[in-house]
Length: 104
Ligand SMILES: [Zn+2]
Image (cartoon, rainbow, N blue to C red; front, side, top):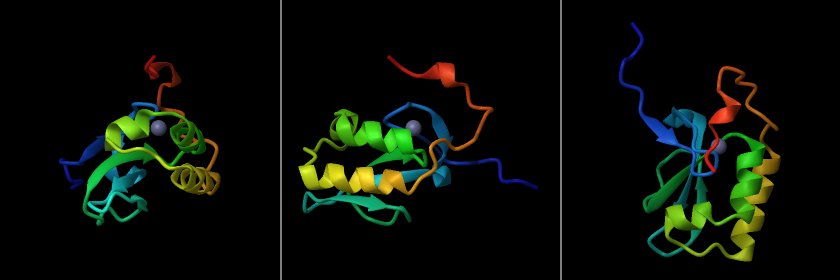
């Protein structure tokens, strides 16, 4: 039997809701560093992004992550996010997800 309770998280960039394990957590640590936390183990304030290159590119350039983390992204953090995004597929290939559901 499949587990009924799947923890869901919202991508701060495109606002799509996915199972937590399909998203990547970005954390502001208590020391104020921005870390990409693939295992969800780093303590601190977290925000989630899809494993989708465009979310990371837009996230690195925009201010939604800053709002979600309540932190200022340094240039080095933005570069790190962009570089991480480059490792990800252009799209998840999940054609079941409606592309029309993007927020304003
Ligand atoms: Zn997204």
